[in-house]
Image 1 (tube, helix red, strand yellow):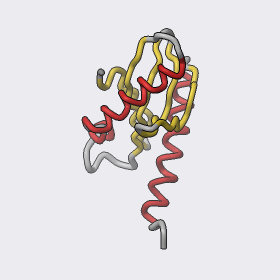
Image 2 (spheres, helix red, strand yellow):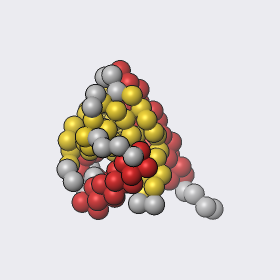
Image 3 (cartoon, rainbow, N blue to C red):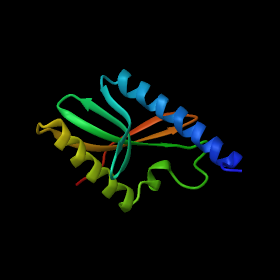
Image 4 (cartoon, rainbow, N blue to C red):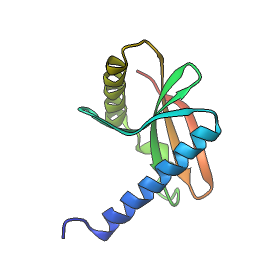
Length: 120
């Protein structure tokens, strides 16, 4: 069997969390530019414009906080991949922008938006 039921469940949970996070950002006035943006450095869950800022957002979805807050899963390795992906995106965009790296924690209680969760 290629995918276990647990992996399948996590994939569905993650996709649902990303949809909720994108809807949340839209309600906050952001414009979603890309979802699941793939680069040679990895995938960015959401790329959005928030005013003058281009936001690279990692979405972490959890059904409980039994193992720690969702943002704790955004370690230094993942941060480095996001920074490299952002540089890749900006080189393709061809313009200078303010960058921001955010984390959106999606739980049954709602969406928590952690702006400037990490920096270059």
